[in-house]
Image (cartoon, rainbow, N blue to C red):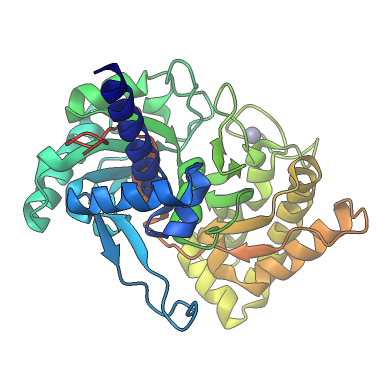
Length: 395
Ligand SMILES: [Zn+2]
C-alpha cells in the first residue's frame, strides 16, 4: 500500500515536471524534455500518459530540419486546457493579450482610458475588456488561470507596492497585486513592463533560445528587462535595469525621478521628440519622427544618432556588469533602424571592455505593440505554483 502511494506521488511529480517544462518552453521534442531532469524512458512514459489524458498533444513543427530522414516529433500542451491574460497598463490606454498554454496568441485588443485614470477604474476597463475578448473568441473565463499586469514602473518584490519611478502617477504607492486580484476577480501578478516584454521576446521573439538576455524597452523612459540564467531578474525593489535613470550629464535637465541629466532626459522617445518639436512642428509624435528618420530627414537622423550614442554608452556599462548573450532593442526606437543602431553599436563597442572577446550582439526585437501584454501573459504561463492548471498538473 505504502509503495503504491510513493509510486503515485512520484508519477504525479514527474508529470508536473513535464507539464511545467512545456508551460515555459512551449512545444518541445522529447529530447528537449530530458532537460527537466528525467530519464529518457520516464519522459517517454509520462508523455504517453499525458497524451492519453488529453493534456498533451502532438504538434506539427513546420520547416524543422529532419533527423534520420524524419521530421522531429514535437509535443505541447493542448491549447484548450487553459488560458492566461496579459495586460499592459500604458499612458491613455490598456492593451490585452490572451494566450493559451500552448503559447499561442488567441487575441489582442486595446481600450482607451483617461490619462489620469485611477488604478481601480483602469482595472475595471481591463476586466470588461477580458470579458468582451472572452465572448468574442469563445474562450471560457473558467479556463483563465490568471492575469499578468504590466505597469510602467518598478514593483517591490515582497510587497507588490509600485515605486516612485512609475511614469503613471496615480499608480505610485499602490499595493498593485491585491488591487488587481480584487477588481479582476482572478489570481494576478503585477510586474514592470520592460521586464515582462523581455519574457515575451525570450518566449516568442528575438531572444528565443538564449538564457542571458538584456531587453531594452524604449517607451515612456528607457528600461531594461533582464533574463539571467533563463529567469527574470527584477531586483529587491524592482528597479533592476532602470538604465534610463543613469546619469549621463551632471549638469543636464532635471528628470522626473528627481535626478539630473538622466539618460531618459536626452535619449528616450519623449526627449527625441522634444528636441525636434521646434524645427519640425510642436505637435509632432515619435512615430512621425521615426517615419521622417527613415525617409532621411537630416535633423531627425542627427537627433536619433545622438540618442543612439548615449544609449550605447549606457549599455556598455550594462554589458561590463552582466555580459548578456544578446541585447535586444524594443519599443518605439527600434523602428528607427540603422540611424539609431549603428551609432549605438559604435559607442557601445568604444566604451565596453573587450577582454579579447566579441561583445554581445545588439539586435532588434521581433514583437511590436503586443510585446508587453504578451510578456505579461508569459509571466502567468511560466509560474505553475501561483497559476496551476484548472484540472491539476498531474492530469
Ligand atoms: Zn531619472
